Image (cartoon, rainbow, N blue to C red):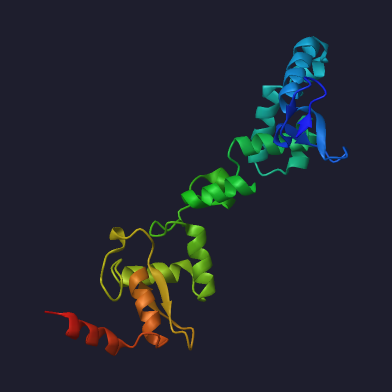
Length: 221
């Protein structure tokens, strides 16, 4: 418990903001009193703010021109020299416009199937519609030593179905997984998640294939 120096009420420590400069690690005034004081100060000093704070630093025309130059391929620093707009402003305007040169927009566009390197030209034609996430598909192909084109070729060869159960990809929530030989690392085909899991257990001899047949013979009517 601690007593607030402003309202004089004794309150729990959770009602005070943390401050390492104080001995007990908490501010002397409670959060409620600090909130009231901040609001009163803002109302009383709102008119004292300089014009540079109330007005935007750059006009909308400057920002539009900076974005147009940035789309042509210039860097933020080059745009800054051309139209006298800060480099950080150029980046902020480009990010707001959805430029994928920045990580957040880039991840979002990759998830939607848009090529970040081709942002100024529109949607990429290399997007694979069979994958829920193209970025995950590219990583999976790299791990198995194949390309996305190899994946698509196998997908077409299997008519878009699992190589074992022959279920179509459109009936699944996830893309077909890449099956490979664990001894040689050679890619064998595309399987659904269930078949790939069962095949892996059989290959590792965690569950012998005979156990499945024995179970079915014993339990079947």
